[in-house]
Length: 130
Image (tube, rainbow, N blue to C red):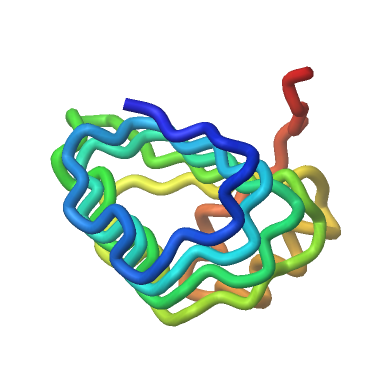
């Protein structure tokens, strides 16, 4: 299952808690992702977060991809270069994680904001589909 709706601006607290069929998220217009929004989204593999994001809540993606096949990585791509406000442990207990940003300056800023996940931040060419 996929969520890709440009009109959604907020995903509330526990909005998709325990969703076991969600594999991809395209959150182009999202401004706020609430606490525990995708907690235990066990099959989640790819998340794209647009430049409008202002806040990602506590444990937003905790335990996501916990049922992933061996070698499966949760890839979270940030399209913007502004660091949002991050809650505590947003990626708690995610077994394999990759956080993709557009450039080295953005990587440095995100690493400072997400100290416990800094080793998972990579720079890659980020493109937006038309």
